[in-house]
Image (tube, rainbow, N blue to C red):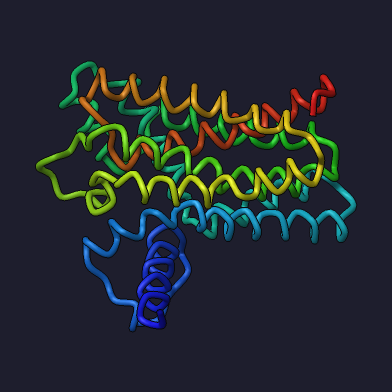
Amino acid sequence: MVSWLRAHLRLLLLATQFYTRLPVPAWVGYSDEMLNKATVYFPLVGWLVGGVAAGVFAGASFLFRNAEVALLLSMVASILLTGAFHEDGFADVCDGFGGGWTAAKILAIMKDSRLGTYGVTGLGLLLAGKLLALRGLPPAAVVPALLLAHPLSRATALTCIYSHRYARANEDSKAKPVAKKMSAPELAAGLLLGALPLLAYAAWQRSPALLLVLLPLAAVKTLLARYFQRWVGGYTGDCLGAIQQVAEVSIYLFLLAGFAWKFI
């Protein structure tokens, strides 16, 4: 049991190191196989990112008595924590699919570290969408929104790894170790980790309608994955980042609509 716990602790810490800027002890080690297995903890990293974002929002709200400033600082904290890892993927997808007309060209543009007009525009609209959607929520709902959106959006991206294939089969990419197929039990574990905050919040609020957020998330994953499949034959690490980011915004928009129409 001790060895099993230590093995999974290593995987969790490795996932933390890969998906955030946080350092981990040297004894954790690294291998492509380990990183592939650590992908199941991607949603659990979302717990950490969401917790930091929520904590900064709560602290800044108390200190400055200004929701806009608190939300901005919360977004800055989450971006610093992850190194804009997923935002960068979203921007690259905007550039690649906006400027490329063949699979080879799209993949080449996404691999380019320079940011183009499509990427800048898309990223600006994405961040504005997050800020405005969260600003529209009741103040008491912002912290729960952050705590459930970060894990659940990352779980949404995991489903693409399970259902589709990696598009850069012959290239060395930073995302290649996490691009292998997940087993059904691994996917189930990842989805459970991603959904637990949602289930807890729905139970606390006594609002089963909150579970309807899974419908737009399923739509986001299905539509984006099909689009990626059509143009490049699968997904890349940037595509996973785009799915996570769009899913996160979709959760905020669902909650905004739910509170506006009083069905949650």
